[in-house]
Amino acid sequence: MRYAQRWKIELFHKILKSGCRAEDARLRTAERLANLIAIFCILSWRMFWMTMINRAAPDASPRLVLTDVEITLIDRLAASRKNEPPGRTLSDYLIQIARLGGHLARAHDPPPGNIVIWRGWSRLMDIKIGANVSRNTCG
Image (cartoon, rainbow, N blue to C red):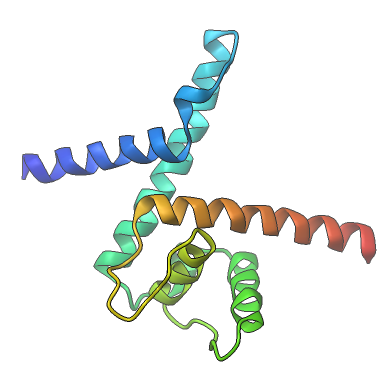
């Protein structure tokens, strides 16, 4: 039991270090660095949690971890690809996010990992910001 928890903690730190690249921040005060690390901890936990939920319950509802706006954006992105039906399960949506991060999603590939989910999530948030900006300025 203890080793399983240690593995999860180490994986969380890997996401924090590799995904957020917290060590690359060049902030001048300890207070700013502490605030940045606090935000990175929340983001890293969400990536870790989404990946673990996907492995434990891949047939769960995507609304468990995604907002309605995020689900709509992923559906639109999937519809832009040829012959790709919209997702129905949490696993379908997380694979779409991972594809944004470079996951190939071949038939025999294992479930996407934390780092590829992180990269895809980052791209999805950029797309979400762009959609919000275009909606506010064009309509």
